[in-house]
Image (cartoon, rainbow, N blue to C red; front, side, top):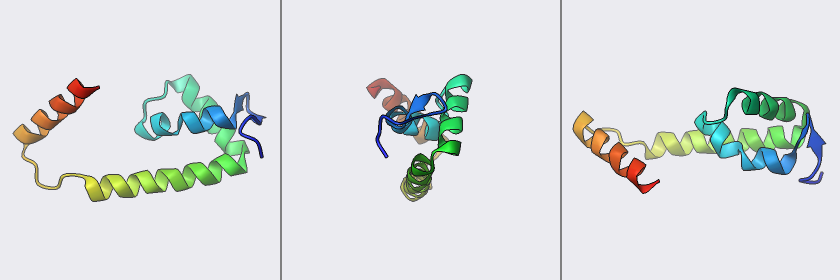
Length: 84
């Protein structure tokens, strides 16, 4: 396997670069469809993407603040948005 292999019109390299956006739900519908077509036909990207997605889900669950009140959550969200 090469990162430049093309499956469903997109390279493995491009799919790997989009993993974070896909996991966050930030890909546009057409990009998401292309991403999913590639992963559906590329066993290597499917395996890596599944492992990555599982890791991100576990990290989010473990690192998520559990007892933030609404005011603190809003302040945190605003501060994180300002840092982008």
